[in-house]
Length: 117
Image 1 (cartoon, rainbow, N blue to C red):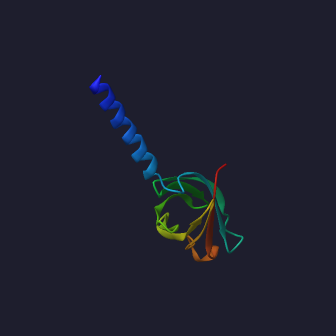
Image 2: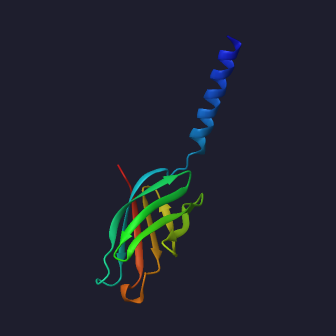
Image 3: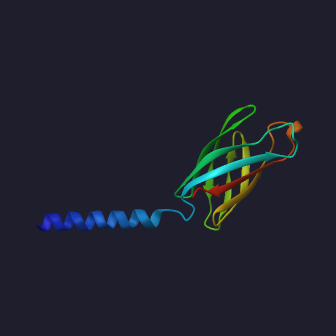
């Protein structure tokens, strides 16, 4: 009986600790990219946030690019889209950021994420 109660207490503690470890932005997000020049097409892609870590994969006109990075407590994001940097800010259910284009013809790149409902 004591072992059962101890096991239950430890399990409850682990579940509670895991719940508090989750970040405020955890969940599924829908990403969207846009370029300054129309000759380069943007696109939509899924993004996952777990414990303030971002992961995803964007399929662009020049290939598939990993999306990753870390969200600071204030929502500031520093990461990568492919080999380039992706920086921006998470606020509520939205993210706004920018990244360098894959080539000079594309113009500046912007990324938006919206939390999936």
